[in-house]
Length: 320
Ligand code: AN0
Ligand code: CP
Image (tube, rainbow, N blue to C red):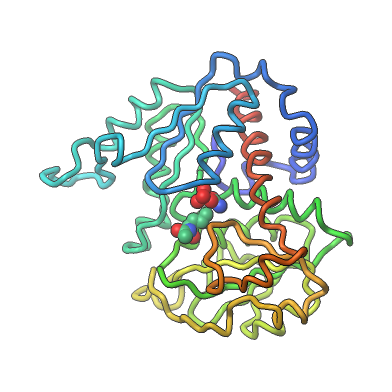
């Protein structure tokens, strides 16, 4: 595997889930695979889970992780081509990426959407440069439009907790005070469409995700109707994807607190499990009662981030 970006990169999902189960049961069985190998984890944005789970996954495989926080302990990097670099950016990605690539065997990159320019974000302009200029396999650790390590961990978690063959999984938008990217809902939709689940997306009008991620999923604008009979409720905020109105890209269109997932919402489900990728704002996205309930699986979901990262790194090491 040379890139981990879309669900297709992992190939057959049944095989990937079986491998995840094996990796979870015997995490240290491939210690020799990563010997004398280095992964560079490049962060343009904050993280707890991605940073720590990626380092842990690398260590489980016997690999050396190095973390680089851009702009804090590195030079500030220019990302756009053709600009006169007379501002605060000291170096261009065009030099920095091949240099980083020369020090490692694999690269992981976290680079959120800027939410200013839809075309720049949806072309994955920064991640593409890492793929093109590093000469090394590249993992998206949440880039402008996707968060595949999260979606893979979510799928592993659903597989572990489901009690019927084809569970109903509902992804619901929820309010948030800041404009957030669409990467998490885009990837979750992409992975759920590829998995054997009954998948429904619910959000207020104007929050339609890009059709290439929605695929054949059902979209239901009535949140309560969508949640009826759900086995899993996956909450997430996202800003306007700018599909029907490009001028609204990255904007907050609603702060309707009626969408906060509380006990009244969970009551119409099939005793659903509650999921969220974290970090989560309590009583904005989900009520204390729901996230503290025994049906909340946000912690095991986060724990599975080590498993998804380890399967991806293992496959990349095997194909070096
Ligand atoms: C980020 C987002 O919504 O994309 C990261 C989630 C994993 N969330 C925040 O910035 C709060
Ligand atoms: N879920 C997730 O990616 O969390 P972090 O932003 O803390 O890495």
